[in-house]
Amino acid sequence: MPSAARLMGAVCLSALAFVLSGMVIPLMPESTDFGYFVPLNMVLGLGIGWVVMGSRAGRGTTAAINNGFAGAFVLMLWGIGVQAAYEMFRRAMRNRYDDPFEALVAVFQIAAEYGLMVATAPIAIALVVGAVICGLLTEFAFNRWP
Image (tube, one colour):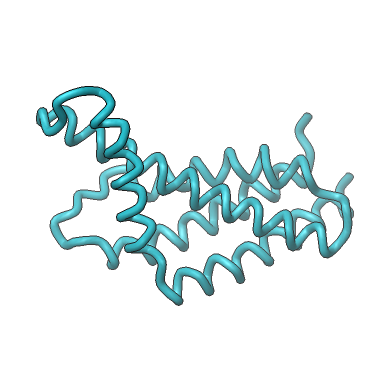
């Protein structure tokens, strides 16, 4: 059921995805073609904010901060996973894998590489601060507009 908390969680997490995507782009190799990188991450933020954060609002300030951390963690998990799956698919179309199992294993290898690339202090700080803000704003929306 739509609510202000779900909308606020979706918008906040989408904005956080936009900011984090902008911070990740300079960390990747210069030859990287980003294509729909930023819009895809923002759509992931919309969906995760709506489903994960919006549905868990209304439990207090501490739970709101934890809700923000959960939303940010799921956003990073899905973001890295979707981008790794896309990269595997791109490589598979160039016949880089001999069988489907090798391609499936490559998704996890690529995700681990991406995870190590984005594991920097500025991204961690932005993720933590953004998670707290998103959680508190979602809680505020739940309390203000029930």
